[in-house]
Length: 246
Image (cartoon, rainbow, N blue to C red; front, side, top):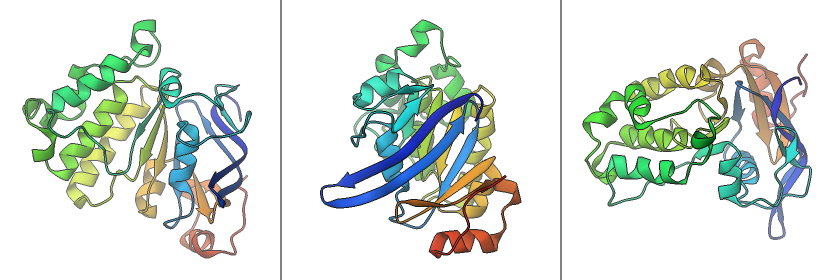
């Protein structure tokens, strides 16, 4: 793939004696939106943990911009341009919206170097206007959708080249999901690549250009999002799927 930003090569991962990933080969180009689908326990979140340094990998298994990031600490990977919106949001309770955003900006180093799109408080508030109204409000008093917006804004303030989103729609009302997913093209337009882990397959297809399906730690489908049918996706979810795309 030309202009490849993220690449995994034969990626394996373990939790003690349990092997969770088996030789994953996945690529994401700069500025591309790729969806990662699969049933619970398929290995989607494990893959994100490997990319962010939360699980150890061997040299060469995870490449960012052509360089191995194996062995780097999570904060070092953030400094190289990777940020994650984690499942469950994991905001800092007791702090306001703006305090949560400030935590990210205080630890971001890429903005000063002039790299990345240059996200600021003001641009996050333009993306999610409700957060401007709630900036002095403690995050635990927000709705689930508003908390998700804070989590996305916090990640953006790290000015990532690659944004990893783990289950953005989980537990949210359809209207709120629509508002959040409407922001993704704005983020992508800045040249930020995204990996979307998503249980709602239709939503994942609409939001991405390509998708990978995982089953028991293996890739069972890789296809252009707009060209793969429901039958192929169903087989990939539950077994018996063909693999590659043109």
